Image (cartoon, rainbow, N blue to C red):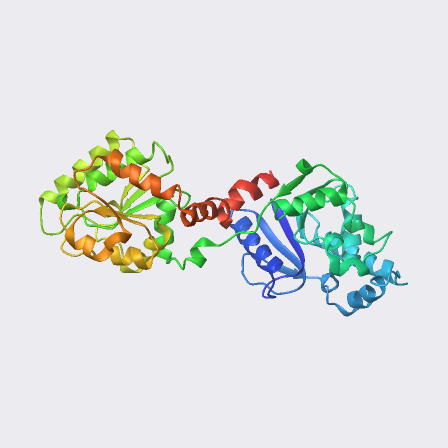
Length: 404
């Protein structure tokens, strides 16, 4: 599909809408669409996403600013229609063959009403691209703009629904405002929030990103982390059985065991086979991940802190430990700790961990985790963001259906 994103400006111009536009362009390109950005200012920041500059689209173009100064006083400039016609002709040429236009704030703000009028005229033409109006801000609902808005055309283009377009707002509250302003039902307005680039925000390495892509655990909740080598004293079977029990209450739970088999005991390979059989018997093939299967040398050092930043719970069911570095790593990662009640681990975590016996039932350990997480607001909010407000989730849940 050929898609154009439109705004007054594009990156590297800094702004909230510009940042959203850039991320949407990247997501749509990654999804296989032919992307182009049309703006009044900016430049190409990605070779796969051309930016076409039409100067009169810019809210700061001298002609546009001169027209706005007059419009703000309620006076239509004598050359306003000429400016509308010029922008419309340029857009008509630029949008030839395009399937969808996503216009950000063009029908929401009065920063360039000539552009607003030109786009409205184009939307009325037969065979024009499908138009999605993306509203971040609503001028008619902002007190500081009321003196600059007036009855009649072209200001009314911002306060009345255009026919044959799709309306999108960035939040439920904006949807309520737009519904009241346009006097249209809520169901006619889609809500697509802004999002967060989780890999960038968490500073995940490229190797971690490749691992997450292969495991597909970014949307899991909770992510249990057992950062140990595969040896019998680590009691990994309790972690796997605990995962099975926990999934009765939290069906999206996954477990990540980071280490390869211990290097100094040949029987560890037999233990790996036993764990795989246990995983198969419990139906956890896509949920209990032994990273040693993918990384025979173990998790690269560059990925260790990445996994801690992504995970939700440290689960350490060892039968014996001499120290307990994972306790320290979890502490700096602000991660709740569930571990065996061993003297070295208790000396580190003291009263701030949840302890259990290595001989406890998986159901008991799972209940400890469930009871903690269901009342942990930080965990609840983190999962909500991870599942609903990362850009990948927003594209799959809201933008993709909008295009279809």
